[in-house]
Length: 308
Ligand code: PBG
Image 1 (spheres, rainbow, N blue to C red):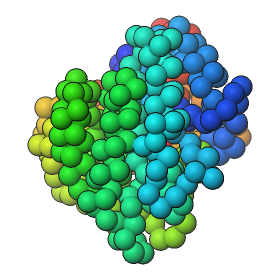
Image 2 (tube, helix red, strand yellow):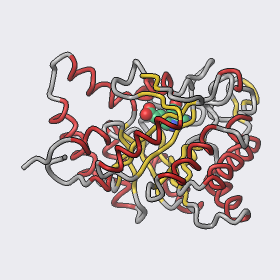
Image 3 (cartoon, rainbow, N blue to C red):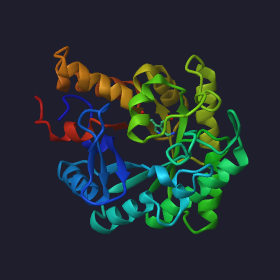
Image 4 (cartoon, rainbow, N blue to C red):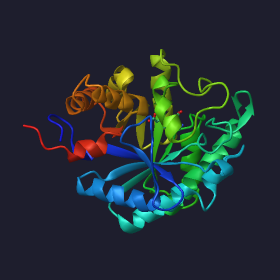
C-alpha cells in the first residue's frame, strides 16, 4: 500500500465493460487493463473488494454494429452498463458504483454529443440523450452518475430528470473541469471512442485557461453536483489546488489513461520503479487537494504490501 497520505478509501478503479461471456480483452495501449464481460467484471471487482477498494467507475463499450448517430445503445434497456450495474448491485452490494454518462463510445462519429454539423453539438438533443442514459443507470442501481460530455447544463438537466423520476438519492459527479487533453489517447483505444473527424476542443476545456476551468467547476456546483472533478490530474495539479481552496465540495481527480500508460511503459523499459513512481504520483495528487482519485493503478496499489 502507499506510504504516506493515501488511503484505499480514496481510490476509485475504472472498468471497461463489454458484451458476451468469459471475455477478457487486454487493451494494448494500457498494459494490465482489459475490457471485461460482466462475469469477469464481477470476479475482478470481487478481488478488488477483498483488497479493500469498494468504489468503481464503469465505462460501456458499444459493439460497433449498435453505434449510430443518436447513441441509442447507450440508453436502451439492454445496454451493457445497466446490466453491469444491476449485476454488481446483486452480487457485491457494498460496492459503490459510479457510471460514466457520455455518448462518445456509442456514436458512429465518436463525439460526446449529438452532432449538428462538423463539429457543432446540438446541446438540447445531447442533454436529452444524457438524461436518458443517466436514468437507465439510476434505474439499474448506480449510486453515482458522472456526466462527461461537457454539454452545457448537463448536471442541472440530469439532476432535474433524476428527481422527477424518483431518483433523488442518486448522486452526480460532474466531470467539471475536463480539458481537451492529449492524455486520453489510450482510453479512446480502450473504449473505441476516438472522434472520426475534428477533435473535442469545441466542448472540452482549453488547457491554458485557469479561469474558465474554475468557472466550470462553480457552474457544476450551482447546478447541483454532489462532487466535482478535475481531469486529467498530473498536468492540472494547480487547478486541483485552486479548486480545493475555492470550493467546499468533494473533489475528485482523474489520473487518466495516458498518465497510467506512461508509468507502465517506463517501468517496462526500466526507466523507473513502478511502485515508487505510483506512490509519488498519488501523493502529489493528494497533496494538491484531491479527496478521491480515479486511477487505473487502484487495484495494483491495493495489492502492494504496506510500506513503513
Ligand atoms: C468520455 C471520457 C473520456 C475519458 C473519460 N470519459 C475520453 C474523452 O473525453 O475523449 C478519458 C479517460 C482516460 O483517458 O482515462 N468522454
